[in-house]
Length: 203
Ligand code: FES
Image (cartoon, rainbow, N blue to C red; front, side, top):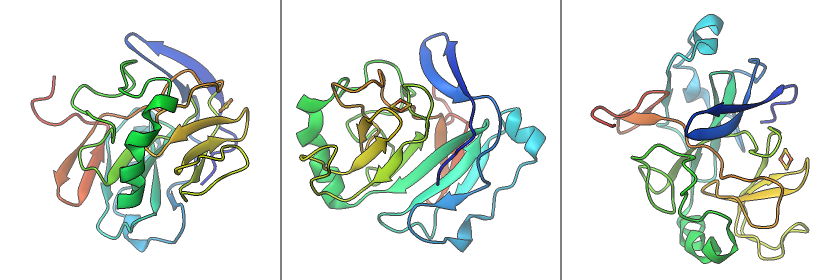
């Protein structure tokens, strides 16, 4: 789901640098490939959303290859279920990435590893390009693409051709300087993600 109209603003909030949106113009929710009637369980008020209220998302029906898009702090947050083939391909991309180990602090400290997620198959990312804040497209198929003949699935920002893998890790040689941001989040239960709140006990 695109987020056309999102205004761009570079934000430096201390240690974590990323681009964010100033206005809440993203559609309420959407999915990458298919409709998903199970995602209506969260609906904080518009005022609460702008204030950064947590967003609770039921991922019970999320299928492999699907992407949920929810709004948090006026930004699109993607929740993607990745296939084993996609996960298996992540390590092969490390030599091509700018920051394969995510040392640039674009994720909470409790998110570790090349999957950049709690559960390997479930990815949670802020869908805002770290170059100038455009909305990258999800191109999840593993196949040669005109913009990358070695493509293993990922996100492509058509604005200035930045590329990220399926963990949101940015490739070398593109304008985007940083990996996509992983927002603070945790699992309230096996199928419920709360975006905007760290896990209990997290530093
Ligand atoms: S905004 Fe994504 S490449 Fe420029």
